[in-house]
Image (cartoon, rainbow, N blue to C red; front, top):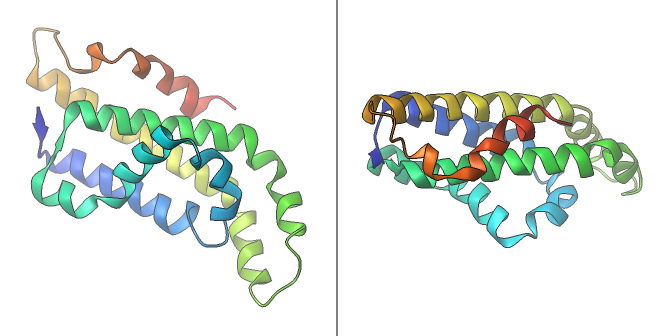
Length: 159
């Protein structure tokens, strides 16, 4: 099922903007490489955050969107567990350079920006489920066919 719903598309764009502008910056990317080295997870995150022009003009298949949301939620969880507790220590070990102030700002705001991303992913998930339910009123939603979606709440809220 191809989604061209303006609310869903707007939510996809918000997630992509938050990720690209505040999470995957040149100052933070080095700390995320371990998590993004997992191929499938990296593909899902990239698909959600880098193909916004195609999504805006062509739409997106609902099952693909659900998988991308799951991938982003899992990414957020892994970053919270594996990166966030140690990011200040990792950043201090990178030494002094001309970008130290910018790197420090990115590191200091990383937790808050990750929480904003989690909220935006949750909003996107809710919009996708609402769309799915509107288009499949008899209860045979696309989301019911993807068992991994049951983990999204734990990934977005859990620490």
